[in-house]
Amino acid sequence: MSLNDTPRANRLHIGIYGKRNVGKSSLVNAITGQSIAVVSDVPGTTTDPVYKAMELHGIGPVVFIDTAGLDDTGPLGELRVGKTREASRKTDVALLVLTAAPDVEAEWVADLARRGVPVIAVINKADTLGDLEVLRAEIRARLRLEPLVVSARTGANVAAIREAIITELPDDEPTSITGALAEPGDLVLLVMPQDIQAPKGRLILPQVQTLRDLLDKKCLVMSCTTDQLGRTLAALVRPPKLIITDSQVFAAVYAMKPPESLLTSFSVLFASYKGDIQAFVEGAEGIGRLTSESRVLIAESCTHAPLEEDIGRVKIPALLRKRFGDTLQVDMLSGPGLIADLGSYDLVIHCGGCMFNRRHVLSRIDEAQTLGVPITNYGITIAYLSGILDKISLPGPR
Image 1 (cartoon, rainbow, N blue to C red):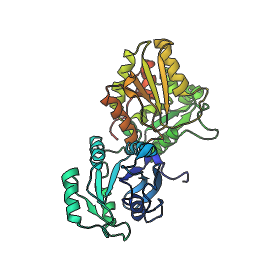
Image 2: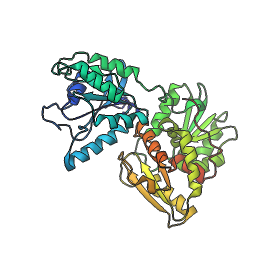
Image 3: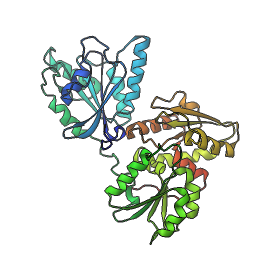
Image 4: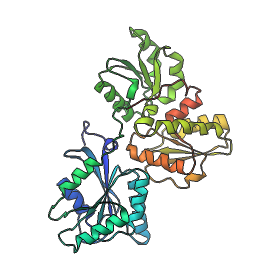
């Protein structure tokens, strides 16, 4: 992937699900016209989910997720199915591949539907199966889905899958990181402290993506580090319409900003772009209900070596313990895995999610809300603890 390619987290995720040996991998290869997935007649060839980013004609940048069989068995099989379940949390559109009457598939369809994930049923191996009309009727009756009939081997009707995906594309996907906060011609100031979390010579991903969003909007963009904020403001002929800062310096920037300038942070913007901003704001009220005996989970999308100034591992826990006491329990989860024992926590604080796709972040919000656990994110948390949550600007329509 080149520097100009769409990041995986910003691509439509298309998951391929079904039992072992129904031809999931062959179907991926047929849809894409490439040998992306390993194909074998041996059941269980696909173990861990395989992610492949590519451009799909008529749709654009996508990620295909080729998963292990839903009917995998044994200790290793259970682990593979668990990985498949994790992959389903990232799926924007699901292709359910069948060659026989459904049984275990019904549970997966119900779970995907509950989370608003469209499911396209596909009968594969049409060139070798028996009475297709009977199978179609069984799928309609059990899954309430109208299946497509295709053959990955011959390519018959495979093009219909692409058309079905286009029909099921989510219509609520974000189109802008800054939303209604910035319009063409607006002067926007980015305050970007270059701490050790920023690789030498580069900016971190949320900063890069926000800058590109503003340039695409034809905004006038200035940038500075925190220690140069005063000089930068003095050099401008007019106050910026919007100031976007790193959440870690929210309080310092708020104290210096012109009264007429709006203020938000990269993490707050991504709370909307990659999640549900209203849910995160409401979840922040859970901070006020914490006590010295509470349990808090810090959930981070990516995995990296702990840093001395790490916001999730160091700064936010320090702010919480300063307010609620050293006995407050703060646990850390890194990576995309499912959250174990989620119901035992009093609060979940999620990262900005720049390495996740939006569906995955929404799934984590859904999991927490289902169990009645408040969930918020880094930027909203710091704004709340700084006493300025009601004074910062939240993204409007995308």
